[in-house]
Length: 345
Image: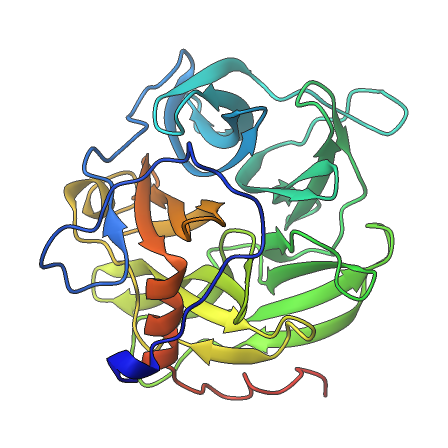
């Protein structure tokens, strides 16, 4: 694609003028760039918590609120709330989120990790990896970040990386997920399911396959932050995993899905857009991990801030613009397996 052919893309959504932002460093030849003061959440951020990573944030009442994967000092992960004035300096609550069932009775997960936080209409939904006789998806909702109601688990085990779309499509809720096993899954493609009520899920479709000509996503892939609606389609950041003689390496990729049939891939970059290069990504509890879980974006300027887990130890922030990342994905597009199809066999 030439400069003359570069598309002008816009985000469908609200303005967010107070989101974190840094301009692209001069001379950088990459579509995504890191926050200069990463990591934004260090080790031992609050009493009883050793590490926070793979977490989700949203704008709320003029500020920012988050649901964080908190690895406690006994090694078991739980979800904690956090708040911030600027999206960079976070106050993490010491107590884990107190979930209740729909009758108001305590309903706490045995463990919880890798949350996504998505607003659909007037309700905020948390999706995380939970224990349901093996690794499965947990689902909860809140209207005020004070009461958190756990709903029925949306999928059978084994499953991870549940991501809701931020609006209904054809009157249904739509969720991405990555069927897996109960171990450190050595495989995985991204699938899609629909529901009229968040209870009964069906119309399952294959969305994306691992692989391609490059090796960075050769082992498995998984959905990241909630897809961003744009004039070109649903923009989604995701993680891709490769195997090396020193273990797995997690990188970040980008894809554009069809607005009306999101099981169809319109464009998918053949390259990673961020990979472990900095000390906080290469060295930690699990080395060599970049794991995107959330974005903040401003429809007025097209700015996007990406929150990602780094080395299963820290939270990092990276930036791009909708014009830059969408055009990069189109320019580096690669067709992998049946990505262009509806995913229905």
